[in-house]
Image (cartoon, rainbow, N blue to C red):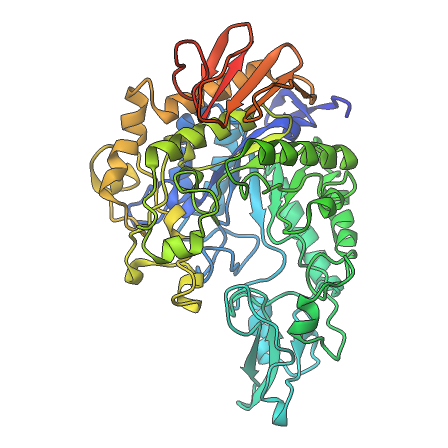
Length: 556
């Protein structure tokens, strides 16, 4: 792709020239704002808290921040139940605070990507309140997916579909006169009614939202559940047994329908109104070969690849996934994305501390006690995996706290949990709170420096030793390692090419990037030889000049 650049004007003069393709090999840091930094002491992270930590973000060496939902919300799903798409949750700040954050990030040379949640609103959104106050067949209800019930007097759901969070995917409403009425679709929590994307008003309103944030300086969007917007709710609705069976690709009633790309073609027209064009990345839970359409130049432009995140610690598996995703990226003229942790999964330092194939749900339900995690092994492998990913062509997405080597918090009391998955699936899911515990900034003090008050999720006693304060002072810390890796990545990154170096030891992955930048990862049990050159960084100390197990090194 050509290296197109734009000179952007702001204030009284011209800013630096911006590469329109900055996102292709960017390092993006995800901030879950309620758990990042709390400026007002109410126990919930906020936008002023983000602003206060921008010097830290700059010192880390990232290219962009991905900010998880900050909109007004009842937090039925951690902020992914949005009351108002063009405002800020008062607990997190104001639009003025948002503008200050954008300006401060840009001043530090950091782009901003924000979450957009287009599949569903919250049940407190003005549109849904209007729908409940309106009659069957009204324009207000046509913005959502309302259907008459089945069975006598419509007392059963229109179909036996299940919500992602457990239980029926349909909820019955009371009509304005108080009688039992229609049912609305919610693929997630009942507080998250699905929008009807066949409705032109819905489409136009989201185009307005994209422009609203783009006009405020947002550089890109992370699109939540990007594969669910287009739906075929033609009656009679197919039963769950039918849709769970193998259907022709693109024809599922609500997942990954082909016509969803018509929606994103309209979004791309909006993105291209700006100079440089706004970026987007799809969170689309689809088979790998279906991702290129989401990542196409006339669509969103990039799509998340979670394949390494779900892979066992195995050299052959890693190589197959890397090769496949680089080929998929070429097919859409996009770049791949590499990610090991985020707000929805067990932190990778903990996953790698467990034997390959461990059932994480069962392990979490058991309190994280059996099998006992090997935390030293987990951190070794997490650092090695990250250093490998940072050497790959494409963009890398980091999740807040992984640069500290944080492990999953597994001992959160039931009465302190917040994830709806925990409450809707008792005894089946623990939920995602363990990776959302507020960050430790100081060794001691209230909430380990997160804020002046008690954090909204309990922090374990061991958090202090993983704090920014502690790790800044320790030359061997994971934080210092991440800073060095990101500094070198900026210096070494060139064109998006990779050449494998074949080795006799099958448990070692070795590739070289243009300019003679070698990345070697040892998945085996014995130290291996390194190529000639200078080792500029390794994820763990070398062993008599050799690369030890569970370690990655960069050689130039």
